[in-house]
Length: 584
Image 1: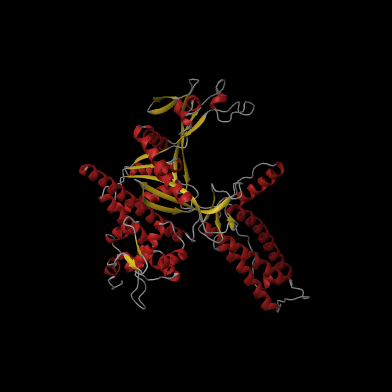
Image 2: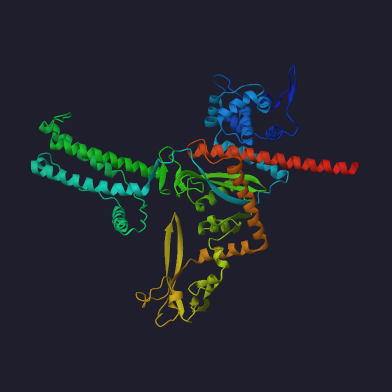
């Protein structure tokens, strides 16, 4: 840890005026830089100083470097070159640096090596605790929303899971043929018995048969001009398949050494059959390893990535430069807000918001303990996993349902096919649903479905006989009178999910819930509107999720201090106005 007393070195800044022979320059009294210094005086920078070394040449004061970068973000400046220029020309920056002129390498070194994501979170949470003491936030409620911001990656460097699956299926056909050629080569020349090599067995990759089925269906759909089916099935290429190809190559080299077969290259030279087999196996093995690396980069949670930023995912953006619904590499940025202050930031490469809620709430619990009481979010966060987490942690859910608007319509309340529009009764300790025609739907069995590591339980109810029912066309889903004449009503109900949904829906329908939804729209969407439109923050400057998070977190801290500065001066003006009234 650094032993130099950087606290006194930074906070004992000299006079605020610079005198010239011709004129005097000074900062106005309401400049936000004073609020920044006031905030930083109460922060503990031991984490930042512990990440710096006191060996070698003494660099720039890390507290000063943090102050400069934070103040730049307060002014909406994220470019390092622009910050370096302002350190030489802007009086506020000159005051913070005490006349020193850090260069771009010093800032890049500070941001990449010394200023980590954990340190930024810690400094922001210290500021949040100060706001809590001063009554600006309670940390008991959060308004959560997300947006997609374009990554610093080339737009057309995409890698798609469906495309890899398509080419992998073709590659496996080629490898299968090579295995047959290898066995024929050994058998025709007697090398199998001579060198005790058995017939090679083609390895099996699970799930490739279903991929081939979808490929064949898509070929037919292309002829009939129907929409293609998704081919994003997750396929794992284990270590044995490339090793099997390598084993065959070693066998061929053993035969070449034993038989004196020389590999040749160059124009006018004919390659022997053994060399041709060896090189084709090597080419296929390299392709197979390349696809394996692509699957490992993509993981199981994504279906695409960019070659220039491996952690960015291609997402559908509202800002479409081609005006044709084109996807662009981006990150899903989440903010949790209270009283216009951004309490948490979270950056994900997940295209949806379902899997981002719990990580944000876990950050809140780890930073402030179990103080959270209410969470408000839009329908993008509504899932059984999220609502169950809120219930288990005794947090009130004000999350809008996906069918919130549809529930207001008359068609929804009159839909006789929905279980919630049916009457219920209990018979022999078992719930029974009564359809519009007065027939009973009894419990048949229980089904379980696993998705994204979470298991959902469904109770299956069905009618034993729907023959002669005149309401079939309205009750059965996509009823066809020619094909479904003998079809009976069956419905699957996730009772845990439905109970959680109804509770959340009741909360948002209350007066308190309506006010919270309005507040969420103003605070969270107002932040994103200001960030994108006024601050022009539509694209990150850095690559990789960690650097992207630090870039957005610095921008967030700058916005929070600006908001705090406005609140303070609004209170000060209000107080001065009351004094003037009393004196008058």
